[in-house]
Image (tube, rainbow, N blue to C red; front, side):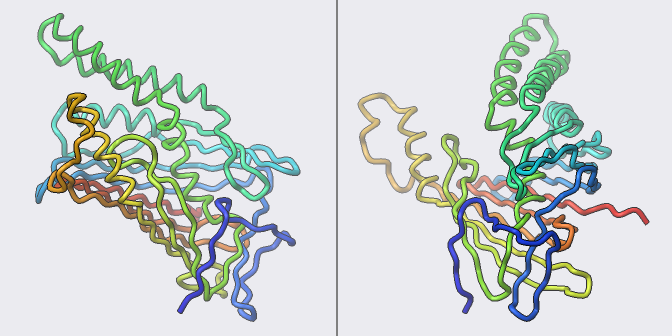
Length: 325
């Protein structure tokens, strides 16, 4: 039976040499945590998202693109990474025409950006350097999207009313600090998650994380478990697998609070009938193949599934390093 070890949220260790290693003698792998200025990698990016109600898929969308990641600066205690996103070369959606238009515009906005981050010496992200520029860009995109959707309406009164509603709604969503940071850092976070860590073949590790709320409100706590699934010493690579489960008790409490907030004052303190509480769950799975000596993942497969009652949703992300022939 595997031994469980509770790690700190940084999930990194001090590296004593510049070269990582897969040590079969003591059953450990050490991922290099050293970058050189000018290091650059291209990743092929495939994103798929869907929503299911009952047995019917009510919407889906897929984006295919490329991300270039370059180390643009380094100091003794930090690195600056730049991620440049190509304009998506494929955006498809199974939603209605308005949703397709919205999906297309938002995907192109978020998918044609430059994201700059500062990390510590071990690759842990410290801050989003160009946050203000991204926020300004997303707010402008919200206004342009609202204008495009309103142009499909008939009367000027309908256009004006819908524009004000959409601009307010989209600006609130796309200008939200949490949304900007989580969206901008999603792919980088997946690529850098294990950077600099040292792991034992025979151990299973756990870490507590925050996950997006399932019903609105504060993030939900969850526990991620990960382990080395396989090792390829000949090619200097290994595979880390992980599962994460969100704390559904917290999600249920948030759901009850959401219901009570919409009730008349005199009814808010009354217990909620258990029959009104739906099934609520969320789970992440991640497979990451890492080249130990460079510290960069070769392939990342990530899936997230959530359910609230009969409504299910999911997203699948793959990132594959693109090595020129």
